[in-house]
Amino acid sequence: MKKFFPLFVLFLFLQQTFHVAQAATRTFHGETMGTTWNVSIVTDAELPDSPTVQKAIEEALRQVDYRMSTWKDFSELSRINQTEDGTEPIPLSPELDFVLKTALDVSAKTDGAYDITVGPLVNLWKFGPEENVPEIPSDAAIAKARENVGWQNLQRVDGPALKRTQPGLYLDLSSIAKGYGVDVTAKALHDLGITNYMVEVGGETRTCGKNGQGKPWVIGIEAPIPGVQQLFGTVEPQDGALATSGDYRNFRMEGDKRRSHIIDPRTGRPTEHSLVSVSVRASDCMTADAWATALLVLGPVEGVQTAKREKISALFLTREGETLVPTAVDFTWRRIPTEKGAEGSSRVASRLTEIFIGVVLFLFFFFAIGMSQLLGRRKMRCSCGAARAMEQERAQIIRRIKNLDEER
Ligand code: ADP
Ligand code: MG
View 1 (cartoon, rainbow, N blue to C red):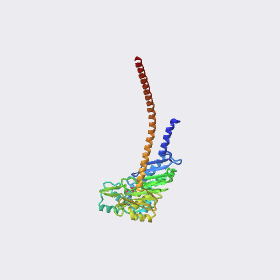
View 2: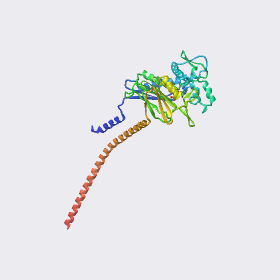
View 3: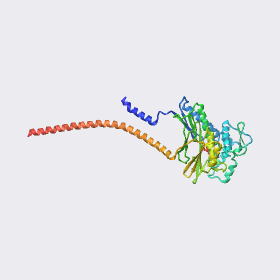
View 4: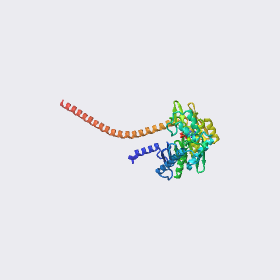
């Protein structure tokens, strides 16, 4: 038993250090719609095996991608965009019709600031799938593209089907498809009996139930600083969704000017204002995603006014000089002050250092005991030999003195 004691102590030490005993959470991840997805589920009940869950998520997201991508020329949306203008309505899948309904609703409530027919302008500014586009579009090209933009020219009719009342329309659902993908994934998890989960697709998230510690899921809001990964705040969406739109991830530099991928259809140009990110909390992620883009287009003043009027729960972050200023509209969140954030990360770093030092000391301790025993034994043998040799030498000297005495 004694022999195993050090091992037992080591096990306890590692268990305490790395919290081995925490509730099990299974994670899944992959790629879709040109971005990544992550799902966490808490395995607190009899749940399907991991390959089944992974397959269900992949299938759900593939369906969305194959219906709503403008980057795949065979998708349902691309085929609609390729359909010659005519008088006949184009049949739609119920899924596409459902997303279209929300998109048109947000367009109506934002007076066209949010507009999924913005596609020609997105392509013109080199943020779409179209290649061979000049670096900076001319004013004439912008004016021409704007002629083909207008959500009022789209009509959902029975079928479901889509009627276009103007030629040259090109639909772009990039601002809403990821959020919809999150919702479809959440449904796929529910269908498998999973009710404690967190789904994230390209930064848009939805949570349900509790996390591995039996607490509400906490989602971080990034500080909208290009090239920096730092949290600005946290939100607990409970059984709901959180989507963020910002100009700090997808942009292009033109000299020292940043070109955002968010286009204001009213000007035909990338947005240029102090509002750098908008996070929206809603019961479903499709709605949150569309509104986050819409409020970002509207900007710091109109965006806040519209969120108040339409009762949208949103957090606006504006840049004033070097400072990020938050404006919350019916939005519950927790701020991470920069210093505290730094403290937080240094706390993690010092905790890791503690763990490392702990492990090293622990191993050194056992090594030292082993070595001291080994060396100790050798040293004792040495000193015994030396004592014996000294004794023999002393005896010889005494004998030699005795002999000398006798000779005298
Ligand atoms: P992200 O895709 O980075 O999460 P969004 O959800 O805000 O960001 O979607 C941005 C995309 O929406 C753009 O890349 C473009 O395809 C499209 N878009 C740009 N401007 C608008 C607009 N005014 N209305 C609707 N969609 C837009
Ligand atoms: Mg969006």
